[in-house]
Length: 102
Figure 1 (cartoon, one colour):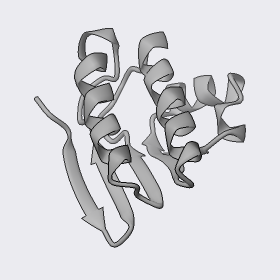
Figure 2 (cartoon, helix red, strand yellow):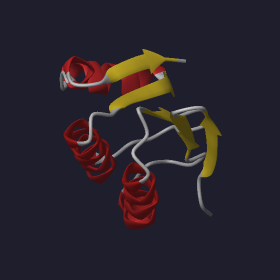
Figure 3 (cartoon, rainbow, N blue to C red):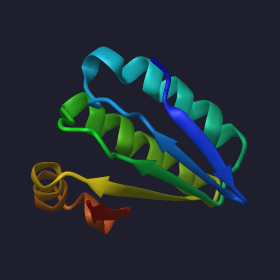
């Protein structure tokens, strides 16, 4: 099941709608890569309804942030569940890109 993707001006919002884990990571990575090729100023990943992000999922988010940075874009991860938010801040991901809890 592909993510829901919407565009608002120079901002693209991606809503995976399912857990960001190894079993879906390749498809998700490909979706994000295709979006980055379009050069958005801001990419928002909306984690509404996502209950789990594993190490592979975190790797996809970090790679997305790095790729966006190279083209002058910015990553925001929003509506992050409380447990996942705690993990992201412990890993200091919030120092690299915006992380907002639900």
